[in-house]
Length: 438
Ligand code: HEC
Ligand code: HEC
Ligand code: HEC
Image 1 (cartoon, protein in one colour):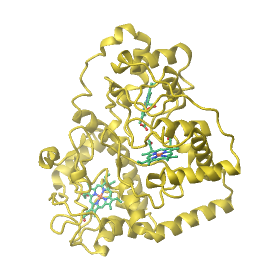
Image 2 (cartoon, helix red, strand yellow):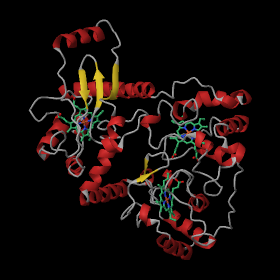
Image 3 (cartoon, protein in one colour):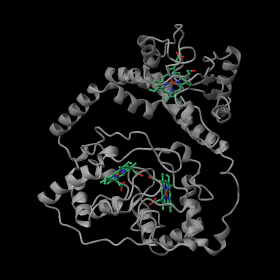
């Protein structure tokens, strides 16, 4: 019964927390609220109307990629003022063609938050939105798209994929994508895009996550023309046309079966292999889990809502949740004085799975989601701790959780439950980390 109640509470607070994150990102972002209507808007009324109805939440009023949802997304929504696009049939660095933009909008960018708009936008409305997006960047007036010459495809065959495998080695795709396309043995593991956000090299065995499609032609185009704004380069001139088609055929051949196409037996084998892989390298597994689940709450942020690398995992995000109190996320780096450096593995485990602090006092079941971490397999919890041990120390003292004042707590509860008052909650950085980082 108590567990149920805790789940219930956490379910609600989780939803509420996400809602507040939206508010927070909105209020933090001075650009977002500026009413500056786009200059060319008068000429493009249909495109503007569609844009405002469907695209601003992510891409922002002024097309700068800073919509309300942007801070929560990785990769970030495209900044249309840059004129830089990933999915093109044009040479590296060139602006895309109208068809390229229409295709990206119709199909979406799989593996990112960019939806496929095909069911909603076609014909004139699709043309209008393409024209409107182009109007955000002067590049479309000053330049012409340099369309890439696409040679005749080499049909897939065992000799072609075998040759492709050699091209993969010759062009050193493995340095980012790993020897097996899954990242194994990759040397470049910390990659950033041109906007300074971290980015991961695609898993080449999961073609359903490719942003520009998964046919040999799509794949050929991606490494033939590169993905502008990302570390994924153009290989024009580094290999012959035949070699590039062989390589595309090889990448197609790397595809594994997606889990939704597996039967029960295959699923079991698949997850058993994934488990064994995780056990072999707990620190890598832990890094993945910490990046996905802890960094967002336990880091310092810049004013435009980006995690500051200098304060990554150093804590300092304040959850001001009246009437429960103010909770500041803890410093999870190995700093001995202000972080986890002096905690034992057992103490960390107890805190993140049972909500018991070092001094024995209890945490509420929110905002620190120890009730859901408690559901994780033991190996994963140990992996998280193993990775946290390797995080270099960052000195950043955060206040310990404050106990709510009993009277204001009871009054707040009364307001919430009896008077049905909406009590405001806020999430904001503890201090201006940007200044400190300089
Ligand atoms: C839910 C958030 C979201 C909404 C809504 C959204 N986008 Fe996107 N969009 C993204 C993200 C995220 C990216 C960047 C993906 C990446 O870089 O991998 C993106 C990228 C793009 C790109 C770049 C394609 C390329 O080749 O680089 C275009 C064009 C685009 N969006 C158009 C639109 C249009 C038009 C709308 C409205 C009809 C829209 N988006 C609505 C999230 C969104
Ligand atoms: C410097 C690192 C780097 C190298 C080298 C590199 N890639 Fe990539 N690759 C990336 C990154 C990063 C992405 C993800 C880009 C994104 O999601 O926006 C990517 C994405 C891809 C994709 C997915 C495209 C899509 O539509 O989403 C394919 C396919 C690919 N790479 C193939 C290759 C091949 C083949 C080679 C060798 C010729 C190669 N890459 C070399 C970093 C690299
Ligand atoms: C929704 C935001 C959020 C997420 C996600 C989150 N934490 Fe926390 N965490 C907090 C806050 C806030 C505190 C401060 C404790 C409090 O006041 O309740 C905290 C406290 C802690 C503490 C210190 C507890 C103590 O004894 O004082 C540890 C250790 C910790 N978190 C680890 C983690 C790890 C590891 C993860 C990822 C698996 C994680 N947290 C995910 C918000 C979060």
